[in-house]
Length: 128
Image (tube, rainbow, N blue to C red; front, side, top):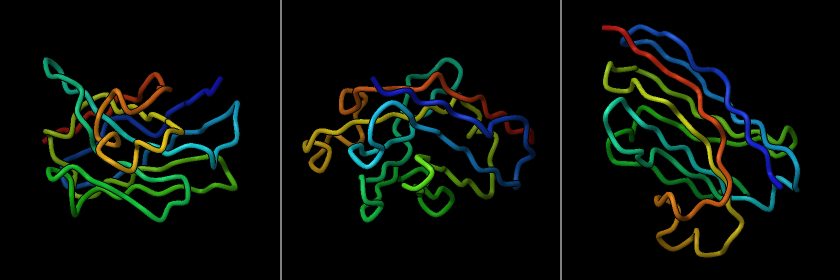
């Protein structure tokens, strides 16, 4: 079993920045590709960013390109999401997810069904 615990959320001002972390335990971290998703109030959960097991391949939703950066530290079993130039529309619960299947390299990386394990999420609230 894989456990994922997010941290780093909170209240931030528009234009500011923050870094979310997702600590992974239970299995070998480098077996897993990782993703970040978010769910805003009244909306469906949406893909934000993803990174493969090595950190060599990253993918982003068009809506966050240029402002969000996903990275991972395999020595610390942690994946990060750096966000700059925060906007009120970034307000959401941010969840990290993990999966080890090779289909991730196709189109599975941006789909909820492409991930087997999920964290509980961390709330990010951006004030204008």
